[in-house]
Length: 386
Image (tube, rainbow, N blue to C red; front, side, top):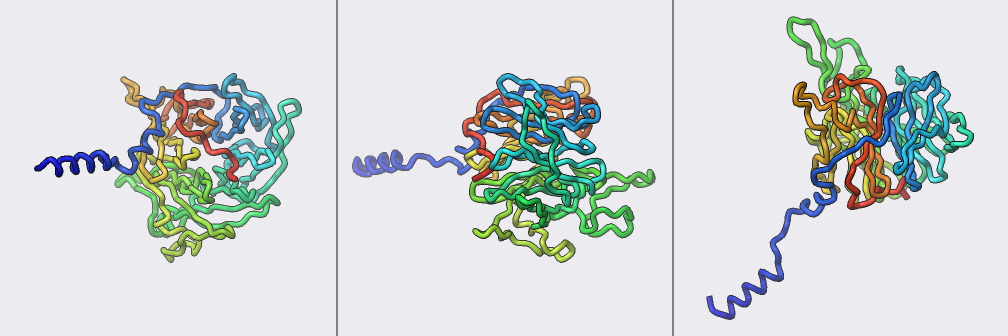
């Protein structure tokens, strides 16, 4: 090679540095060697979690001596401060603030058909009793506001995959369905249960087991946590599949994602091409939250883990409880069936329901909020979205 060609080769090398994989830069947004600490414990089980810009978290406790209490927790100086109550059998799920600062709490008693959503303005000096906002939401789990002020929720433990939009006036409309695991959800007759049934029978024992994560009442949960991005897309956590669906809308707010691909489901059921990501690390995904870079943070209850999903769909395990040296269970760490995450500026926290299931089998009793010790490189998405 002559001198001229050598100079050209050096110039091309310097002007075209070795390209990195498309996801490499995104991975750095999730901390390496992450650690978690318990912020506060609660006497009663909790599931939902939200917050606001003043550095406070909000959750609702199950039980409470006949009272269904909603509490505020300051992240820097944590203590449980009652700011309101729910006038119902206490089984609260998701929480969310609207643009006016009113707090909404989904409540799903043991019978999913009795599920309701309540709302009130949090007040520590004179804690109010919440007003009923909506009632036609059986199995309601996560809740999220869109930029037009509508509240969205899914049907959780009913297993039918319904997702509803609720107007500011409380009118409920079923917009679409996440594909359920079976096309005849809810029947108890195994001889008539339809295609895709999520049932395993142990030969010779006469015992029927539910298959997959998120089994309850006894249907597999496919529409759980919800979160909107800045572009108006709705992400839905699919607990049983270990997946996240991405749902799009046109400028008028009408559903634009494809539906109706499988005639054994209802016509408004999402096609499988609406799956944003599915991964074993997400098996048991419960609640989700977005940061300002469009990355999704997932509380994975079944695995006692927190998992990140980049905006391009790469799945990264942020943290998982270490196994106990004797029992080999992962139920002695800072996570105890994590359910609902919240990103408060540079802090990540998650509610833990302490449910005795899978990796968290055995401990039982109470709940807690655990937070990532490392600060986030990208702040959390301000809620509600605008």
